Image 1 (cartoon, rainbow, N blue to C red):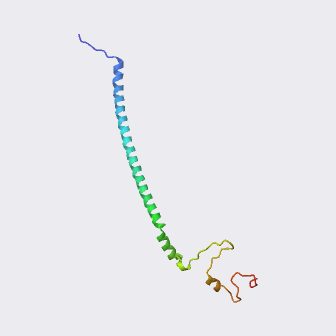
Image 2 (tube, one colour):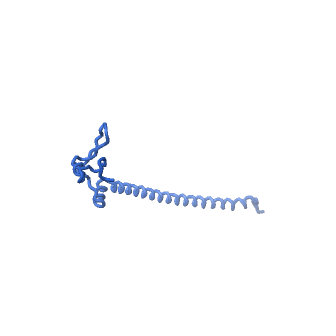
Image 3 (cartoon, rainbow, N blue to C red):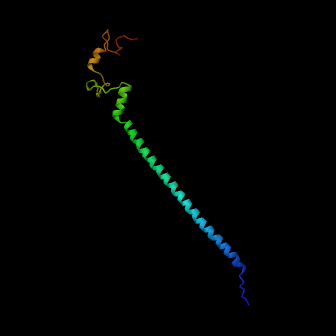
Length: 130
């Protein structure tokens, strides 16, 4: 007689389920690995953008400092507005006196500012302007 081996119903279900779980596990690992690689590429791109932005920031700061340098500002004001530094002989120094108001004028300017009546400019005590 022949020996017939009977397998239970559990083995019929266990084999296909284990194969399906094995395939799902393999595909899951491959999918996670591909997502990890794509995230690494995204991080690399963002780091490159960050470095480029830092480089651009440094260039803009250098350009700003060169634009605001005193020599460049002086050249622009001389060229466009006609402003120049005064001579040392024409600089007025205001000195404080303990009594009375401040005086900021040359003696020569006081003599030149006298009008034809002999009054100094702004002296309205003896007549002149209304």
